[in-house]
Amino acid sequence: MKKIILMALVCIVSANLFSQTYKLETVFFDNLSDKTYLSHWKLIENEKQAQTDIFSLWGYQNYFDSRDDGSYEVEYFRGNSKEVYQFLSRIVAFSEKYKNEDNIVTYISNVQVKISTYFGYKNTLVYDKEHKVICRFTLKRWSEILAKYVSYCDNRNINYK
Image (cartoon, rainbow, N blue to C red; front, top):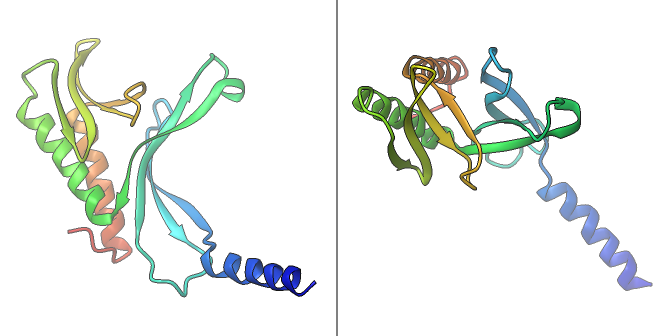
């Protein structure tokens, strides 16, 4: 009986110590297709622990035509504020450097990135970890994402450099 009570007490205490609840705050979303987001994982519970600002570039991919039936989440990149800034900056720099090229592939922060022409537009593709799903934006859109990220961090005093 003592072991059961002790185990229950340990479970309750550890759940409170190690659990964290986050609120996803949108930094950027693609309002054209409503499928790609850059989000800030804002800690709203257990703020006693040192908070590391976590951001992720993620989106939805559809198995079927219906978003309700066949939609699943895909994460392209996740990191702290400095890692995300470096990731986005390198994507913009890569896109700028190879804007007149096609089918150029590199890895930025262990994520496959490719320059490709799509319906006559140069796009920079960022692949998910399984190399099955992409988010696709032009250099102008990647620059906009970086600018919104910098503005978001500046407004909330988040160190990203």
